[in-house]
Amino acid sequence: MSAQTDGPYGPLIPMPDLTPDALRAAVARIAPSRIPALTQHLFEATTNAQQAQTLAPLRAFVHSWGVFVAIERYPERAARLRELERIVDAGEQDPTDAITEIRRIREAAEAEAGL
Image (tube, rainbow, N blue to C red):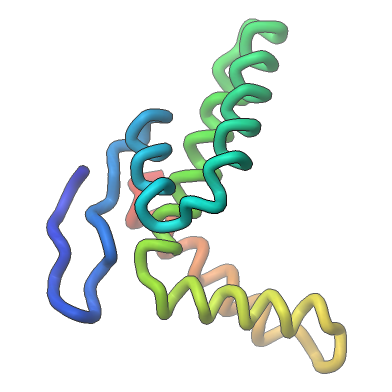
């Protein structure tokens, strides 16, 4: 894992290496309820990679869970993303600003994860 936590407003955990084991360990610490989904996604990615003889499904797995960890390791950012997603899903107001902010959060998480 890279970088250390930096005070009360810093991340819950350092950003892990982008390997299945490191991502699993990170998810176990910050969102243990998501371990079954991670395990299922990894199983499907591995199976698809073997069948198609391509690493693309494994790359998608690493990208998806790397972004998830980058977002969830900051509780305030994760909570804001969930609120924005609720706004979009509810369909009760113009979602343009919420979608723009969601995009910014995800792009920042991708950059933070090195993706």
